[in-house]
Length: 246
Length: 225
Image 1 (cartoon, chains in turn green, cyan):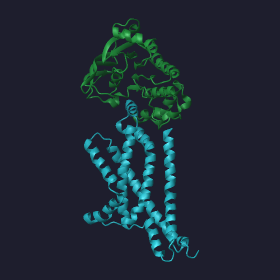
Image 2: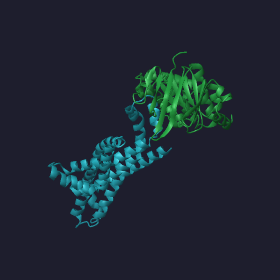
Image 3: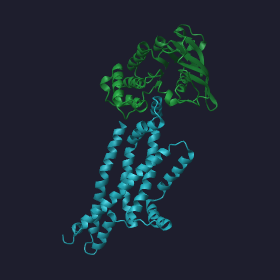
Image 4: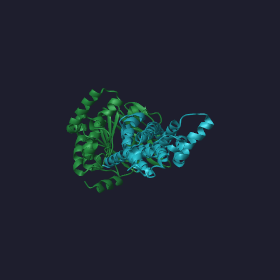
């Protein structure tokens, strides 16, 4: 098998005395989709945020595209250009138009010309079916539209890995579909490598190549394919799946 | 009407002198605002710094200018500092400096408040795109903070313009001082002139400050939506 795009080795994190992540280990191949499942508030988002340096961690390391990353020696600004992230609260910059939101980082960080960045941005807008909104401000968009723009904004940096942190959790139910379809399309058409924290179990089952089930900051189950949903190993996972009612 | 106070307004160059006084008040306020806002923005940014020492120093700076009455501040700059330090500049210059420092202190608190009220996730989404801290500040935080702080800044400007009425205490020929001179010169012949002069002064301050007040309300309403 090829070298994994991302390997997490013995990662642990504490807030002061309280340990929130215990000895996390996993690896991800290029093009794979991993879903992180588990009850709320047990460290899934924290783990995701450790992967692009929004949270620090005390021990362990990441290997991303062959580069070893430790909490204290990481050049996160450079890594984040390759690791895109989309958040729950579709936090577009309210002072900029949709087009400016998408082109800000390519122009300022990657030093692309404005024309080049705008052309790429318009392609992305077409792709997320929001071409008509290039010059709109975020406040004029619905939640689902904002979230699709947020995804387009992350894609504009051409990341090799995308992190999705409960991106549908604060959307109206009828908006959820469009966002999930877009993520699915990214996997199927672009072969994008993704780690997805979600509570949408049907979606997770459809898209997952690998499932990580966490509780209390520990990986309880790590399953390839869809086995997790049909054949969970731990009682905790069985209870969790039963409670999700899908 | 011969002895009516209103005639004093238009006697000789009285009206022009009053407008000249207003102009003095306005340019001192305007210069103080320009320098004060620039300095205040910088101090406001420093007040969000991680260094406890920096934060403490500028906190004391703010409290000093907030607690000391403006008259005392003007006396300090006009009578005490020049004598101690040997600077001998006109009252209008010293007043501009005193006002600018006062504005910078007040504005630093407005800027700090606006910066910390930009949601944290805005910072994180900027960082997640690979922006540097500085790029984040310039393109994301500052424009949003500016929008949030604009009403408070306009209010500060109206306060500064009003407070120029204290300039007469340090012999600057501001609107009030000119008015006072005209009243004293005409008090014998036109005892009611005081009413008309102060009426006009009220009107002039109102004409300058009221549009600012309206603007501030408009921005505040827009921010709420």
